[in-house]
Length: 369
Image (cartoon, rainbow, N blue to C red; front, side, top):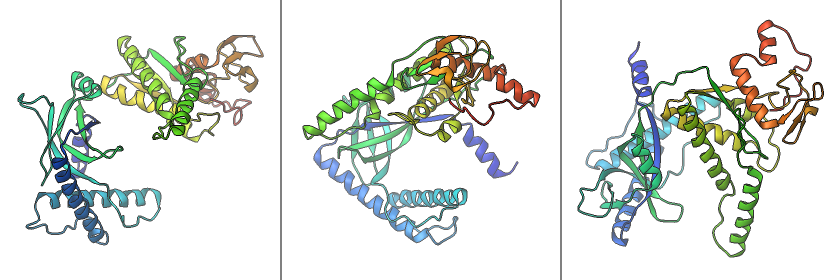
């Protein structure tokens, strides 16, 4: 094993990292000092990026007499160039020298010693100490055993104020495939459906209500919000619920393959981003909880009968499934989740045919998830 492989293995075993954003409660004077430090950090970073762009990856520029701010800025500049060259190597697209850098600055976060009403204090190079408070998400993360990391970033928030992006590290338990599977399928009309018969809140009404509120805000001259936020909140709740259920019942989750979802043609008012968002959230939460997750190809799962294995697009009518061959009726999304479980256990018709080397009659068509 080389030294580089050992470093990768060590970095891989560090656990899972989650980031949280906290608002900073700085008075005008401290905010101005912090923005001044951020401006210098951005200037240093942009200069180092342009100076190091044509040099080898291991080259650096002397920062003698410039202080900690310049050292941090050069490190970020080298990371930006390293990431750009790696992307160029992977995609083949030419990496051009960046002309701008984010308006931010590195800092150190520490807990309050109990003398003030604030929870944390953030220190930036050349800047003052800035107070910050916890919020519910960060409290829950720390309650679940997460450890707050000292390194953080101070940046300008969407509303113009200062915010801090901090990181929480979690131990990553090794997941074990229990063989007892719980399938999940995401639809538009039924939201999240599970193989145990659960059908969640429909996503279309949530999207419609969010669009109505956005129109009202736009008429009143307020800032517009993304209509996806409301749908994401519903999917996040469902993701937390299903991981909690799987951990309590010692089950392994079966999700639709993200590669397959990325290749699907977007359809309907919502498209495929909701299914990808749900799968990503489940994987993130399951990684911390130690719940095993399997990914299966979702093709034919919502049009294949559970009783007779007959597969046809005409079997499905919206959220209703009615087999044209045996007359079996079910909820289409629940049946899709159950067929995902059958794929995981190797009892799905096409899985069995593939193992036996038999090509099915409808192979290459009817690829509906």
